[in-house]
Length: 249
Image 1 (cartoon, helix red, strand yellow):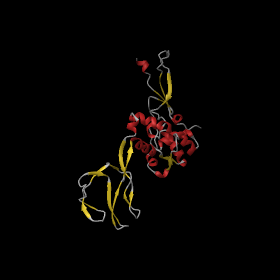
Image 2 (image 1 turned 180 degrees about the horizontal axis):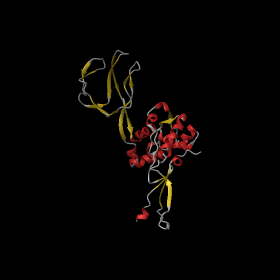
Image 3 (image 1 turned 180 degrees about the vertical axis):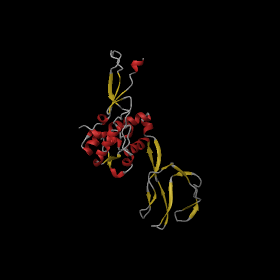
Image 4 (image 1 turned 45 degrees about the horizontal axis):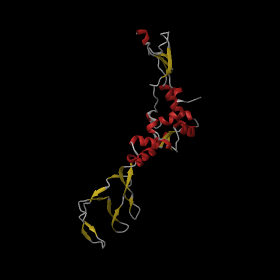
């Protein structure tokens, strides 16, 4: 049995819009796209129900579903598990279209490869402790508020760069060495292209619902997709019929 999302949707009958339709009571049957499935909160918010997965290469949702569930028609479950509504913007772009999409977004190669921001490079002391985390957004210049600096002999002398904008640096006391340490060249340029690649790569880290819980989700969906009696539009638990506006025109 196919578990395609559209097969799970109930039907909706609406009056035929064909201009050459002779019977004003004719209806067209289609899927009710206004019905939207969701994973209930007690499952969606509990990581114990999911496993982490890293999208490889140009894998599509159906490829992931085929690999993990042995059923490519469960692609909708892959998307649902990650609350992905727009696969074009929320799923990693295929490698052969990434640059084309980015070029269209930025307008030219010059803008695509221009600076987006600067960020720190991780700095550790002699004991391996992190002094400055990497990946922090910073300016390429920093105001030097040091009144005194160490000269080549380790003596304090007046800082000629005091209160001037200078390339980013960090000065710290290294307990392993027992002395002050000055680190320069601790930032790197990130281009618009690099920035977009990082964003796209983050989309590769997704969660997949464990196979054990698929029957629970299918039961929930069956309840969501079933029409309840009581409405004037009710035909069966899987079919509703809209009002025939042609009868009133």
